[in-house]
Each structure stands twice: as C-alpha cells, then as structure tokens.
Amino acid sequence: MTKPELDLGIEVIKYTFDRLPAQAKIKVIEELERETWAQRLDTVVRRLRSQARKAKVTNQDIDKICEEVKREYDAKHRRH
Image (cartoon, rainbow, N blue to C red):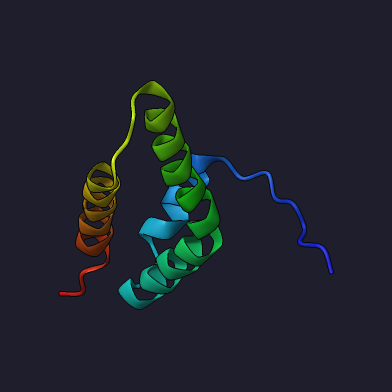
C-alpha cells in the first residue's frame, strides 16, 4: 500500500506539532528518527569518504569522527 502524498508547508507542520501534547511530540520525533536514520547514516558515510579522498585517513581519524557522531547522537537522545 502506498502512502498518500500530502503537500503541507513546513509552517503548517510546525503549527500542528506545537499544539501536540508532549507525549505525542515524543512519538512523532521517534518516528522521524526511525524513518530518517538511513539518510543520516549516509550523510556520515559521505563525510568520511570526502575526508578520505582529501587526505589519508587513519583509523584514529575514523575513531575520532565516530566518537564525535556518537557524542552528538547521545546528546540528542539523552532522556531527562
């Protein structure tokens, strides 16, 4: 079954999101994260490949980049 396409502007989406209860906002964010993980991972891989083409990248460089991404991810997903 194909998903119907909706042509909603970002302002309509923001307006609607702002009016959701906190628990519903969390569910929306979690779903967006699930649906966009491949795109986000692809961005990281492209960044690594781009850096590898510019200069020789060592395993230490890759480890540093991975740790940076992990820190960013953890900071965004830390539950308070």
